[in-house]
Length: 328
Image (cartoon, rainbow, N blue to C red; front, side, top):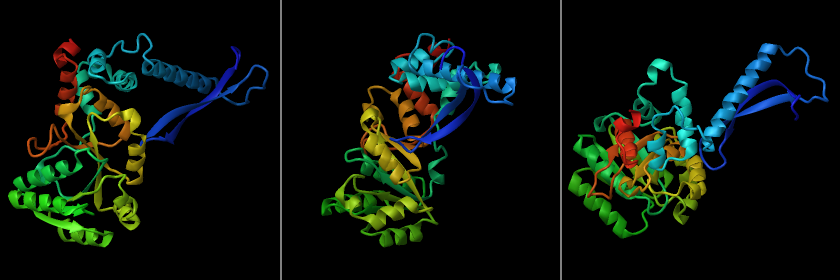
């Protein structure tokens, strides 16, 4: 608009992501060109405030694009970059760290932990009905079976529901696992059957629902079931994502997470992640807290409740340096 254009005001606009269930904050700026008449009655203080907001936005974009100086002042920038975190993920963390009061900027690792939203708690406190959704091969069934075993070990009354099983072998595996670990198992072929199981168990323990692959024909043809799962206020929906997933090729998965109204993100295959820092990008992409994590296939590796301390340590160790060295 030219060097003589004047900034009149600005406002923050929140828009939904096109490829995920989250949202983005944008800044809309109103200017008057040198040829146009400036708006009357806009106080100088308001214009100065708008300019300050634009300057902050410019600095944030510079960090996101990897401009020189983007990592300046942020102690964990180098280690997160070497762990595979993107420039935009590091920029978001650096922005939040810089916004802390000066007295709180001595512990960047604590800030990283705080940025990792997790379910937390203990196995004994896990209850209600949980549905596991994800692409074929993501480790969805292994995760659900492992969670069922861990809950039963913790003394939680547990029901495992196999939703729309593909074949008898799948049912046989669930029966074998349930008998070995001492929890109940059932099969559901419709929304009515699933609702009945949830009602029977949900108030007194935990119900774990294993689903077909999210893009399978079985789910696509079960319209009533999909609506029931997505719209239920009782069910808690977990999007199961492998830690080695290609985030740039997951647009369909992020849209599916929005359609199914997923509440949590469960991460599998931590042992196969070549770039642990990508977990920060996954957190930004799904915009949902982490619930469960696995470091291998069940039963060789048992699932764990997501904990910020453990995930932060895993990311930092993946960078090849210790947290102490990063903050020295």
